[in-house]
Length: 528
Image (cartoon, rainbow, N blue to C red; front, side):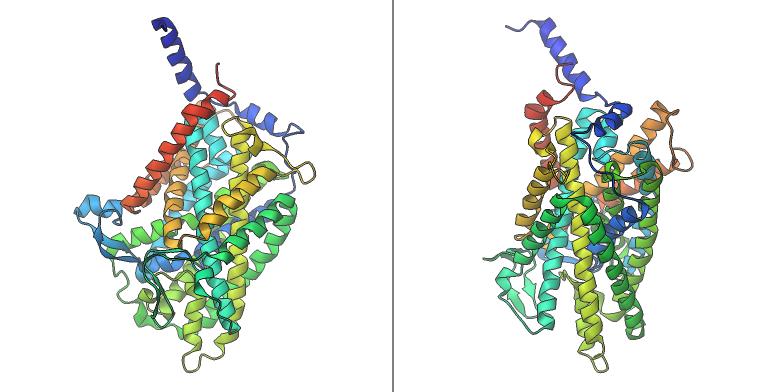
């Protein structure tokens, strides 16, 4: 029989382990051990290109349609109702209300949140330039248990973000094949699960809602091809990404300026068809596309000069992407009715297709092709960055003993976390072939916002705990910006569906089971 004294000692040891924090100095020294070190090849402009590649490449070409038009289901249900709406009105909705033309306001709200959170990331990333991002920051400030929770959350965030973008990429492949007059069987170029069915541009039903026999092959293939590229090395990946970002920005500008003459102002009325609920929900839906600057910080260990380059890369990403997002949202909602982009994973290029079929729109056929190619390159660069970030989180958690050591293996030639990269590829690629864009984006949104809350909390704690530590970048106005970041992120989380909250808690429970029955026994703090 276990004595009360031994029981108390074990309980005390467990509590100490749960709140054990890694020394920031040790985190940095561990990362430069030769057998664990990653190659340092990234400069400020490469970091900015990585961030723009992640942010612009996903939402601006794919989820912007869902954020604008929302989703509709057959009957009202609590599960599909935004949490804040239910708490205020105590009524269920038949889906998520879209922002309509007021998506421009949603983007302003998201931009404000991203400024506050981006400044928090910039301060922490310049202090702790280690692979792992929010996971590493919480390990140094909030303790091992919280670090495990956020690391588990980041795996969810990156995986479902890439699933969403991969599904959007497949929709653009369909559009490209259509441009050349080739129409493969829909079952091999669309998700197996379609909660709102599948329709063509004329509104004809191709599949009813629910599951059907098929697999989204383009979504799977793009993930696996980019996995090979990432295994070969981040330097080669960053060079390819830089080229794709330039083409993508050019395509966005061509879309904006070409379509300006086709804008019909009456499409902007009513400006807020679903009120502030729609504005909040639209911002919650599209928020995950702003995790590009988070991906920048996950590459901290591979920066040539992280103290200088990380704040630059994060803030430059936010400024460039917010301007481009707003311009595209205003243009798109002015050239087609906002309701017409519901369920469309390729709203920008399909809007161009509609215009090209109108009298005087024939010249847009080649514009559509150019924008289509730019959109596809944009999504490729986005998947590239998200997969890079996800593999680095697995790598960092493995290095700390919280995940099996196999995920921390470095390729002997390319010096990249090859095993983690391959596993991340299959974890994303297979579900991307099965699920639709609305389903996979929900969990990414709540995971992203939760990570942002903990990063903001970490800034406040480190300001109090280690005020003397050198910071090449400080968040302005003391604790005000981190506190505002926390508040705004929680508000946006409340704009997500009840079902999303339920699934998120289930994911966290699974993570806690893994931690208490596996990870805590293999952590470097185990038994201390």
